[in-house]
Image 1 (cartoon, each protein chain N blue to C red):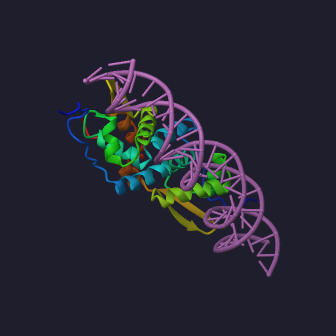
Image 2 (image 1 turned 90 degrees about the vertical axis):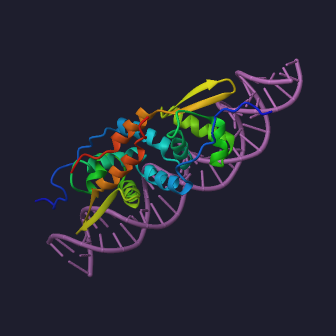
Image 3 (image 1 turned 90 degrees about the horizontal axis):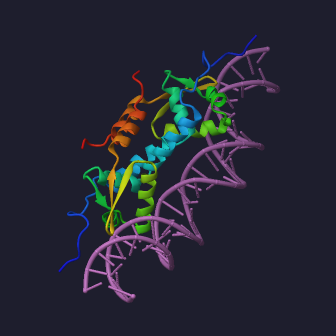
Length: 107
Length: 107
DNA sequence: GCAACACATAGACGGATGTCGATATATTTC
DNA sequence: GAAATATATCGACATCCGTCTATGTGTTGC
């Protein structure tokens, strides 16, 4: 004799542990208010130099530099150095692919 | 006389601080490997009782309960209690809207 | 009512994260 | 070469986060 069951079939995880970790890393990179505002500003233009963000965001220059590095490490922005300045631009293809990863399958 | 400028115009943050915080909260809810696997499993079926996840994910029952609460608080899953069991289901509309939020504007 | 079960909550603990000031590195300009 | 500028890195600090064990709460079945 057996106890009553809650679900007819056991679940099968479609996302393996490694893939879930990779996706979580990229999501963590954008799951921050300052970094979302960086992305928002970058989405409006081709590129923007780092010094501009310091005035707009109300955080210190090292903090902006830190957040830009997190985004760059995740592959969401790219750097271009020119003279004194470093220009950052949005990797729109990466962001679009991330958006697709979250789309749920139709019901 | 003026120093050379890096960018022609000052940046205007399109995403205000409050909206960025709200979006970051929801993104934080899914930016975790365990929670991504929960969502992945839920996306395959209509609903699933909580006990099934414990065996599949290799973490303790309280940990699963904690992660399901984070997802529920973010509005990404909903709960339905029936007898001893609690059935969770994916809020596909919320996930779809989140996906749209990340879509970058075309270049 | 009592034992077994499903789930949630509380508390503790270690590690990751966001922020800052201070400083280093590289570039321009005089 | 020296001063000024733009950015990155370092080290410190407080806070947050994921995990666990222990325990509480509600439900089922004998």
